[in-house]
Amino acid sequence: MKRGLVKICSLGRPEDARAARAAGVDLAGMIFAPARRQITPEVAEAIVAALREGPDAAPQAVGVFVNEAPDRMNALAERLDLDLVQLSGEEPPEAIAALSRPVIKTLRLRPGTNPADARRLAEQYLAAPVPPVALIVEGWIPGAPGGTGHVADWSLAAVLAAEYPVILAGGLRPENVADAIRAVRPLGVDVSSGVEVPGAVGVKDHARIHAFAAAARAAFEAEQRASAPDPVVATRADRSDGSTVALLKETRKIDRSMGIEERS
Ligand SMILES: O=C(O)c1ccccc1N[C@@H]1O[C@H](COP(=O)(O)O)[C@@H](O)[C@H]1O
Image (cartoon, rainbow, N blue to C red):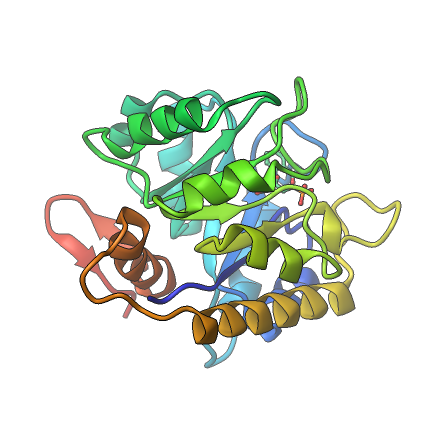
């Protein structure tokens, strides 16, 4: 079973993108929704170029949108050569089919959501004609689509992570990411505010990016060493995460009619 994706979200500067790449993260997010960390396409171009500088493997570039029109998402994905699109609003499952890139869908679970309802919600997306490649599970704050530093319900997230390809988000920091991985056993982890310079929204602290990635990797490795693979019984998360990780780590573009295409 292969797990261990690390995503740094809400990059706002090319130098922060270089730090994320140097830290070996898998996914790098940029906010295109009207939010505190929203960036322009011009800034995003510079960030994507910085992510892909040099011979090392580049993190996947993720465009983060909230209830956006598919045409605008596809146009930005094309212009910036995005690898993935993250939907962090109330987009319905069928919305994914209109997008030209693989999708990560955020599920913000309200306090009091029970496991059966959370599973039903996840299933609605994963049963869509074009399903998301992963689900981000995070906490819920009224009116805020993300980047709040609010910690998710780890027990509920663990229920979903046992069955589905879940990336855990919400209030993660270098100091708590190992505990979160042990508690939830997610496919990956995602952080925005927890690696920022205090008081400087959208400005990343490079030492904290490195500390977050190192702590997450160590915890994922420890988890993998500790878990005895069962060759017979495989949960849906087990079956899906090999291909999800491969897709998220290695795939650059998906042409829906031709299948998966690697960046040359
Ligand atoms: O980071 C933001 O500002 C943001 C804005 C709008 C939609 C999503 C956003 N980020 C996502 O928020 C969580 C993590 O936030 P935090 O670590 O608790 O600050 C994650 O899903 C980001 O992708």
